[in-house]
Amino acid sequence: MGGMTTLPVTIDAAPAEASCCAPATDAVVDDATAHQLAKVFKALGDPNRVKLFSLITASASGEMCVCDLTEPVGLSQPTVSHHMKLLVEAGLATREQRGKWAYYQPTTGTLADAARAFTA
Amino acid sequence: MGGMTTLPVTIDAAPAEASCCAPATDAVVDDATAHQLAKVFKALGDPNRVKLFSLITASASGEMCVCDLTEPVGLSQPTVSHHMKLLVEAGLATREQRGKWAYYQPTTGTLADAARAFTA
Image (tube, rainbow over all chains, first blue to last red; front, side):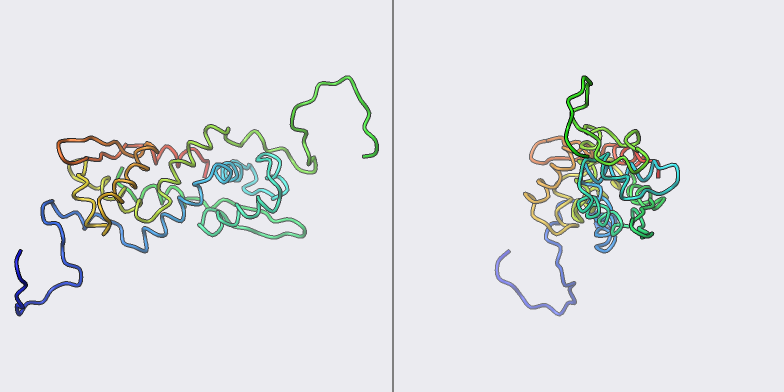
């Protein structure tokens, strides 16, 4: 732990700082995957978006008009549209404009796939 | 839509403001459920917590020491402990102090159950 000595060895950019414990780096998801998963979960990390997502996933017709979404959550249409945009950007829904109204369809499997990314 | 007339009727506290569309209130999750689900998803709405959760769920021994978690995510132990606290509070993990170190165990089923709360 005293002075450094220059040795003719090749080292990795990031030296291991703790050798006390069993290495577990193998198990960690990579940065891109972690960001993608976090985006999906963050989109549902809000009670109103949970409600909105539950509404579109429960829709018998497979989609819901934004005009149907405002009343159940008690929010204005611009606020609902903002929340729905985050769900769309996370890949949890798609949006289709038809005439005056936007219609939202849930994307089957995105959430289940994200949950299955973990062993537990 | 002109003047109001007082009528001898019982009304709900929140009048329906839009009657244009099919009512969908039945499908919405209740407030308490929406908050609980949002808490689970919000806890995983961060790339570092996604990585930490993936580490503990992949652990062969069913738990991981906080001393094993710092290196894979490249964060200090206080920061890792903070992230783990949010996972514990969301019901995604449990924490056990043994001597010097805290050990974290994933809670099986919390995430899968949350994902299954939706039809999609």
